[in-house]
Length: 146
Image (cartoon, rainbow, N blue to C red):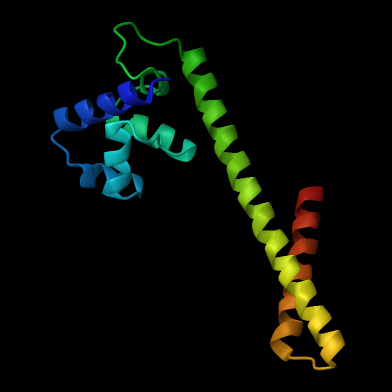
């Protein structure tokens, strides 16, 4: 995968479609600065944006990764495989973010609990926060189990 070639392809197709960077950015829910970085080869779209970007440009995921259009059609099995890899990667990123957020929430809840025990002051907001965190953990565990 060549980021420069991919960026050039994104820019070329966008211009062929008479669209601005802002138009493409609005459609994908990103900033025009992000689109500019992709087109200049400074960065690459987030894995969760690969499929929507390819669809918006009217190309396949394989063409987007190659950075060039292909004359012959890409094998549907290959395109499906790439699509699945992108989806799995995006799901894994989402899962890791969710895990990190929960680790932070539980750490805060434990700190609130420790402060309450040490200071012998039980603030209602702290108790609500602790109960909420453990409630969410329990319900997520139950949903995963079934």
